[in-house]
Image 1 (cartoon, rainbow, N blue to C red):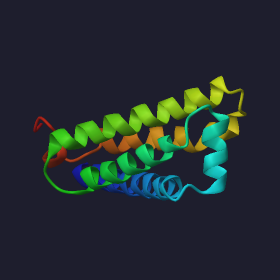
Image 2: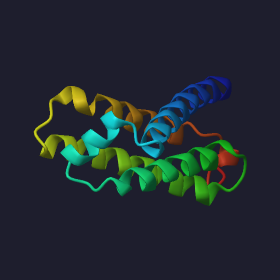
Image 3: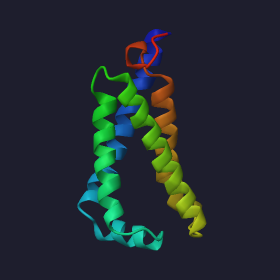
Image 4: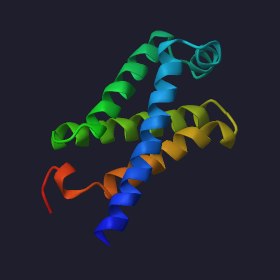
Length: 125
């Protein structure tokens, strides 16, 4: 069972990390489509830099061994950022398809957090 949980953890964590890094890069370089989207949602352009930097730092925190408290904060940050993205899209009248990416990242965040090994938890089980 332990091996299966580790495999689930690493698959979810790698996909979560790839999703956060790729979207973080797009936000940091201020790709035109991303700028258009952030403006459509009603946020200022500089918000892209803030979110992009925090995504990169969150991925580092989740992947680096030790520092379980920092990992908890990173998971919470990912969860809040992605639920905020979903709420922003819904509030702006966007189609459900616009929320697919953030919803997928929410699921990956929860799965990665839930299946994380004992040595990556705040309280060792």
